[in-house]
Image 1 (cartoon, one colour):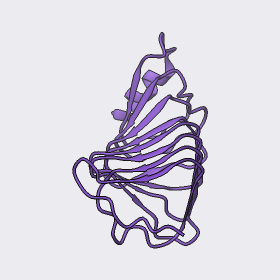
Image 2 (spheres, helix red, strand yellow; image 1 turned 180 degrees about the vertical axis):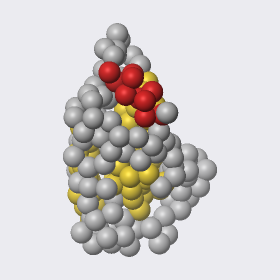
Image 3 (tube, helix red, strand yellow; image 1 turned 120 degrees about the horizontal axis):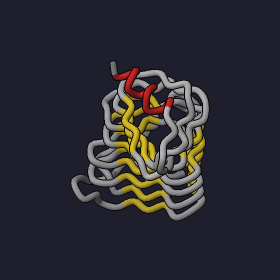
Image 4 (spheres, rainbow, N blue to C red; image 1 turned 90 degrees about the horizontal axis):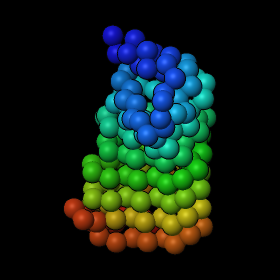
Length: 173
């Protein structure tokens, strides 16, 4: 039922780009490019054009599909990259979000910001996070979450107490 609704929406021509598309446990093989915001609550399995302005991950245990055109990513829950990815804008991890880089290479052309109790997780030696802009860590406690991998921040690297937590455990070398 949810799949039919998504396919029905994608099968029509969207009249205006200021739209939100909500995806719940589905497979999409049409273009997703005429929407400003995509909210993902379930598994991603997308083919074809995918270039919304912002993709928001709301569900627990989600995977960010590699190889898609991400402009901005917002993480509100537990999310892991399932492949190498490029983000042409910014990444925000907030609320109770946890972003796991895994053993992948993730390149962010803008900045990375953890806020409230949002956290970053890197526990694989082969994991690389490249941030062209600022890396601003104001999120939750990260002890035990940053044990391996590499963070390359070309802009400012700022670590300070989050609005609902403390951010410690970002070793620098």
